[in-house]
Image (cartoon, rainbow, N blue to C red; front, side, top):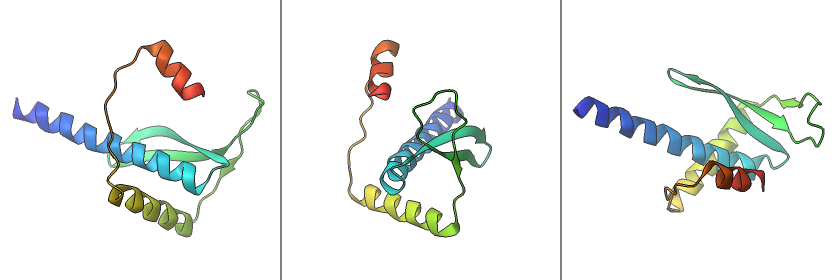
Length: 102
């Protein structure tokens, strides 16, 4: 039983950090979307894709440098220190689609 609680807590921490990364990425790179491509054993493989209105167009991927990573890290730290609440809210699939599409 204790192992399953630890697994759930670990998942919550990873998802919270990923959420924090998404928010920081929007603030640091407003013209790009952070896309999480793969869940890896010790992290995630992500890409920054440029916004496009053409759904058929292949999105331009931004190559990031160490300075970009440091900017993201700093922004995540600022957000964490801001002590903003993260609330779990259960919504229907349709409602979630509306939220993410807006």
